[in-house]
Amino acid sequence: MAGITSWARAGAITDARRAIDKSAAKITLPLMKTLISALFLVCSAISGSAHELWLEAEEWQVSAGAPMRLHMRNGEKLKGLDLAWFENRIDRLEQIAGGEVVPIQGRMGDVPAVQVNAVAGLNVVLYQSPPSKLTYDSWAKFENFLNHKDLAWAFEVHAARGWAQDGVTELYTRHVKALVSAGVGGADGPTGMETEFVALADPYGRAMAAMPVQLFYQGKPRADAQIEVFARDGAGEVTVSLARTDAEGRADIPVTAGHMYLLDAVVLREAPPESGVQWESLWAALTFAVP
Image (cartoon, rainbow, N blue to C red):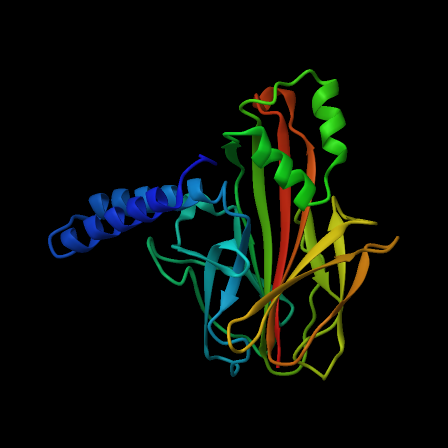
């Protein structure tokens, strides 16, 4: 699906939404689920050619007990599609706050996908996807992905395996966190996802010039890894920069007040032979705002 054109994507999504809107007054629940499933699958297919997936809060600072609404978005440079809540596309969706981990329940088709009440302190919202399969429609797109994500070592491995450059296949999973504040207290920490960012400070607790984070893979710090940093200011302008983790998987990300941030890092490895796929990518993402 990596070759879906922009107009085809937009048309497919618009048609699916129109079908849902036209039928809303007389539709049965099973048919509604089918239509919403179709819309989500269109969006999921598009995610192969778009890049990041992130959780974006409507408000990054709320009162304890107040609603938290977070959009699940897929796209590039902090612009993308709003994905609805669909249980078959969720391996984990949790709220971690006040020392407790609580699974988040939603309703089919909810937009924003995450709608929960805040617990006092720092709220960590976690999303993990099941694996999805992607087939690249050109070697150039796979090449661009490897270069973009600092994974050029894979060129040599791909050639050594004797794999063709046509129809490169990949499994990908998403490992996403968002930080929302509902007052003082609380902290982020490892959650057991196969790859993840851990925030080493509360971005809402004090003024800071840099946000310290640590990147993990299989429970261990991931050293010398590229982090792509997306920053959006109050006017909607997005800037992109790069950082690297040190020997302990840590990095200090320069931040500016009044900006939202998305951190992104990708692990690439050979897929299990039984999968019938060549490559597997694991995407870690962390979003937060600096007041």
